[in-house]
Length: 113
Image (cartoon, rainbow, N blue to C red; front, top):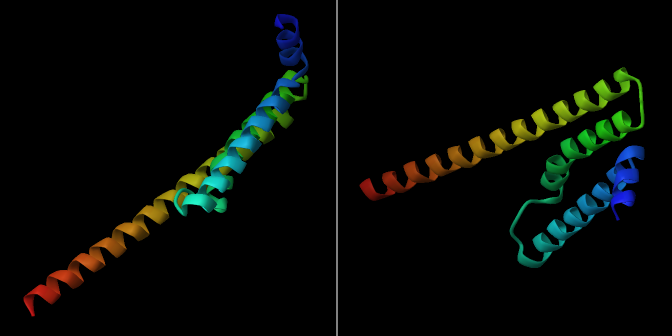
């Protein structure tokens, strides 16, 4: 078992095992959403997992001896995907908060009249 793990890390094939687990996680989250009706949507799941996938590609490139510009490109892609995910979450939260404030104002106005 130790030899298998050592070889998997040495040649970078461990990344494919991690990708398989990420795929299973994504399918489980989508199934949970379909069964319960709650939880993140497919787009949110993809934006959540994309930075991790890019980081795994950077790891695969590094373990495989790729030139540093290739590794840097994967890392840059991970950063961009992460920033896009954060931006989307902040905009979603801001939208939810503004809807909450609007409903609160409407209910306060209704009580006064």
